[in-house]
Picture 1 (cartoon, rainbow, N blue to C red):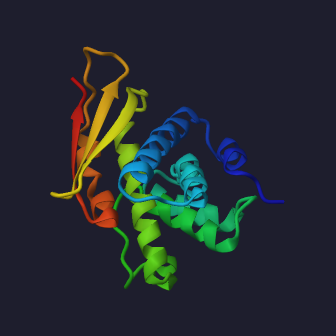
Picture 2 (cartoon, rainbow, N blue to C red; picture 1 turned 120 degrees about the vertical axis):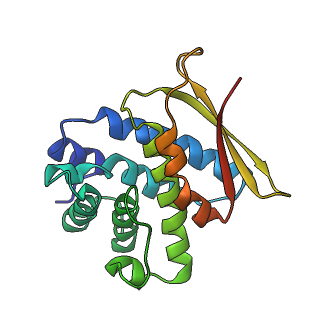
Length: 195
């Protein structure tokens, strides 16, 4: 019997706080992007949500290349409520939350996708990668995220509200990890704190 993302996480991980925080951040980004830049279907939201919950389960096997192990585990176990192709999406999004970017020449499942599906993986993977970077310290330091989209100059500004008004968390990891988001949405991005 296939498990849900939450059940799979509880089976293979002791740490559920970081995955649930990354899910919260990813859902905020998804909703803002969908409202202000590019409308995405609800099924993509569900796919991203499950990928956010499962992105780190590969630690169960090994911390080195844990993103690739996460992909393997999602594929091996499957997920209740999802079709095979959606499970493949989730596995790829988990894989690309860190490390190398999607490569249609080298990466097995990703190269089987058509152009439209590869774009979906890049977009959702880009959101997850960014969300993971925003909880790098595993301390849930970001309270809210709003987006401003300057359509004319094609620049997305992420406006971050920290949980503690006078403490701005380190967002270096998120700045480094916005690359896939920019590729997926063909945009430039800026991260800044609300003042």
